Image 1 (cartoon, rainbow, N blue to C red):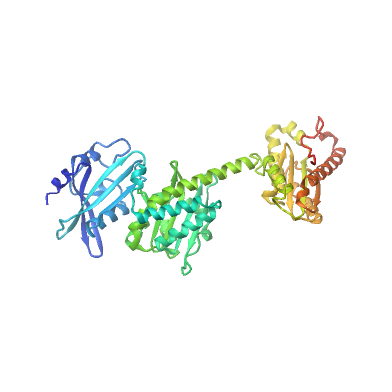
Image 2 (cartoon, rainbow, N blue to C red):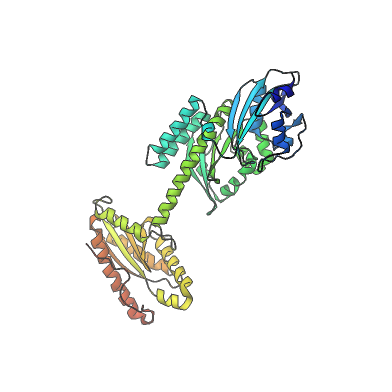
Length: 479
């Protein structure tokens, strides 16, 4: 067969690939020849689409042009050897463009090789029509995932359902989504599904300070492709060469194969979705499904994380990290209206820092800020994070449901003891416990008044630290 004539008959960038026959697999994969458009893509590429060389040499191994790609090899092998017509729309890590790829088998096998055509089109931005040009079966899976994510207000529950579906699709022993927090340099499990008959440990068992650093190396294992699908020991040997540390941890855990997809949104890496010990016969279907599904999942996860950050910004005091005045007002309203804590007792503690002005006068605002941070830490050693609020200035409020007067008094004593571990931290504290949460405003007023009694006593003992000026910056009035 005249391969050059075959390529020249194609208008799009097209080449012919040869795949060496091997017992139970394949050998070297070469680019036999290409039409002028394909050769030009190598020798005169667009900006950002440059390959490892700008010289096209017929019958060269494809790895002369770009790094070894297990996914590309699998497509060439399945098309050339198993005579399958294959399509993929991908955004490889190594090149910032989207490729619309088509592989067609060529009936020209000889004693050494099998052949297929490889045709590609390049998009600088993802084309939604091409991305949605998928089979009905695949479209159904993707649509189901999207509906589950939008049909419930509990994102965590929806993600658990979706990851369970993905594990079933992969017929894998374990499937998980790990998120990365680059600011905190931490990793976390967003969702996970694990089969009942596996010996693999849940991902949460291996969460430690080293996992984030290990995840940073996964990009090397993907090696410029859009994902990693290592379906057998030969593929796992490639993983071993690229990332020996990770390979050893996988082997020790009893992992025989792996699917790994990065989750990216707005050009940022959110984390990874992976499946362990999957059915290798489903490799192509898994790749086709996850290429579209992860695109949607990444967008949904990014929106969820954004809303979570916005919620934190709206509810947290940015200096001390405790809940802010706005969130305190929301909680007070929820209790007083009976929406929260109906029938349960409510304990209130007003804690006002003593001597902030003198610290500011001596060390400036930085010293004052540190004092506020340390005060919040002392309160956080005793009370849950959701119970501590910065009401304003140097005043903190604790809202503790379901607590007795004795337990609240013990916790207040513990706070004053914890304060001794920080420089200059001293609290004036007033408390009140009401039998019903709807009486929270009354409890706030009483605790506020008792706090000022404690403060007056403190300033009588330490008159030099009395704040000049006068009245209280925050004084809670019952309605």
